[in-house]
Amino acid sequence: MDELIKKINSIYPLKPDSLKLLLGEMHKIALPKNKVLVEAGHIGRSAYFIQKGIARAYCEGRDNQITFWFGLEGDFVFSYNSYINGQPGYESIELLENSTLYEIKDEALQRLFLENIDLANWGRKLAELELIKLEERYISRLFKSASECYAELLKNSPNLIQRIQLGYIASYLGVTQVTLSRIRAEIK
Image 1 (spheres, rainbow, N blue to C red):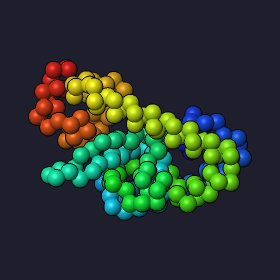
Image 2 (image 1 turned 30 degrees about the horizontal axis):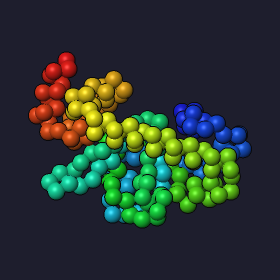
Image 3 (image 1 turned 90 degrees about the vertical axis):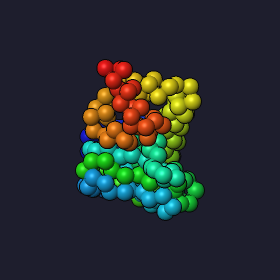
């Protein structure tokens, strides 16, 4: 719970009463590896905080799954389209390890945002930070080579490489596993 509180307050420091309201709506759950938290084409009804474990978001391509995001300890996980628009998500989100999460129902989160300005500001700040991360990933994918993106991934999340199948990393970088093997050999 300490990690959760630290992460929440790193986004936007909450008053103790507001933090208590938010935590009161969150429930700790343990889920197995390969559990799909959000299924493409369905409306996600919860948001999650990863205490322990890794998740990936992916879309179904013509012949394969295309991974576009990894979530680690300390990350929040939810379908943006489901949460914001109440519509089916375009992505699936799957756990890559046995995981411990804190779950909050979207309905409860929306209610808290409506009733508590402190929590509404926290939610706004979370959305702003997520938008910045998305923009950085997008720009990186446009202007950096797969080798540069892999080197950046190694620098920013070195333990990620040890915990995620290389096929998922190759997909995330937009290359084949053979190309990823060459990139890894060059970097070593």
